[in-house]
Length: 320
View 1 (cartoon, rainbow, N blue to C red):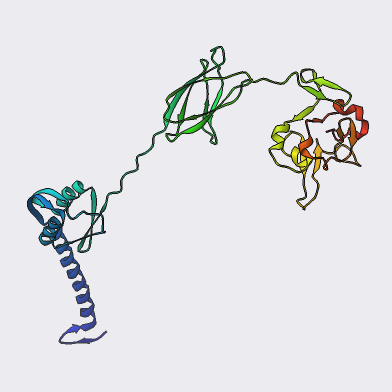
View 2: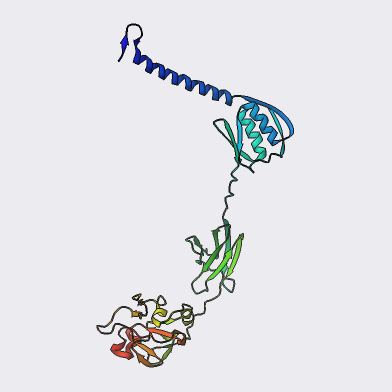
């Protein structure tokens, strides 16, 4: 620290003076900003062009207006009635007429388009009733929006309420023993669904190795492949055709080009041949991957011992 008898502590005086100077400068700036913000504006004009109105406001306030091209139409005219109005009130009056927003940054007043509040799309409350072909209500029917977890069930009178997006959605209706229905709903507040009985092929004939039986009389574990759906898959082998079609039937593929799919019916039931037995029009084959899928008329899979008993040990891993 430097001292002398005349000026005392020079270094200490310099630091104190610098601190006081900063405070004084901050105070002056704050006072100037406060004076600008508290400045009142008086302007009376009828059908004045916006460009001229903004120019006069620049002269009265000392601020410069800044806006992008297209935000303000300079040729547009408006009426202004300001009498000793604060700056913010004056800007609000002018900008509300023009649907603009304003913001002050330093010496500029920035004008921009108001962000139009996106109208919140309210869901539509769909009310309806589910009945059968005779008009009787179906209680406990499942109703849900397809592809979502939003759903409900019908009450004892078959009535329900479901919140559906305003832009529309596909509503699925399900009831045990009835055909599933899908209905696209949009801007609809009420609906009545008439569900029809699902026809089950109880008279369908199933081949069980030692003969045929009607489906209604069948007690063994037999699954039937929907051949029409299978053909839509555009597969090349019967193994690929069975993949994902039946419960208890798994298909294993190696992924190698030209490799054959391995079919397993309810796992592995023998030590030697783990694949199922293939029977085509009464002829027994060990492998059916070479068969053209387009030539297949029907496929039944015998899963349990009672169904495949006629084939003995060869049917231990199931019969197709």
